Amino acid sequence: MPKNRHPSAGPSAPQHIPSGAGWLPHGYHLAPHTHDQGQLVYAAAGTLATTTERGTWVAPANRATWTPPGFAHGHRFYGRTDVRLLTIPVELCVELVEHPSVFAVSPLLREAVLTLTDDRPEARPGAHQRLLAVVIDELSDAPEHSLHLPEPGDDRLRTVTDLLHADPARPATLTGLGQAAGASERTLSRLFHTELGMSFHRWRTILRIHHALAHLANGMSVTDTAVTCGWSNPSSFIDAFNEVVGQTPGSYQADLRNSPTLP
Image (spheres, rainbow, N blue to C red):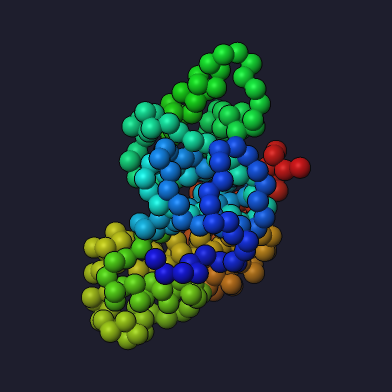
């Protein structure tokens, strides 16, 4: 996978961190690694991105990322992040989807994850196991909200996506990008649909939303984020953000500021 696909490089760690809770700085990066068991990652405050060879999933407020066993993946965190890592035993993973995804976090799921990752002793024998069963039930019923940005295998298409990763605000048309890739607009349009399952416009919009989530989590204003990420005006940015994320940029930032886990 090409490098530097995330905005705002920051401190990194070569190994994964264990189940539990911890505060990480903006831009903190966990290098690609694998787990023998499943992993649920929830940002109780902040935003996180999970990247595999299949692409990148972003979990803003009220979302959690799920990675099944055996998938090589890395994480990057945006804003000061209260990260909660919960290991899911292999025997319970069969209850969940077999691919990386992002799920909506209900109030019950949130409290269960917070309790299981707070490193508090069990009040009664078996309490943690029963609470983990609640997590599985909630995840099984939760809708997928995958802010998924797929990555191509075709070299021509990868040339185009690499250019856009390097500069999400790039105003070039698919015709112009095709000149750099050595492919026609028609060919590239077909490849976006067949390889990535979406149009060029949709893919670039999601890419820009990924970057917008990171900038907003780091405190950038809505107007500055719109310009930085390639929108001609804040109104069009707000409409696109609301359509993809399910809330306005202002509401998203308010959720980050008002997180009950913030010290």
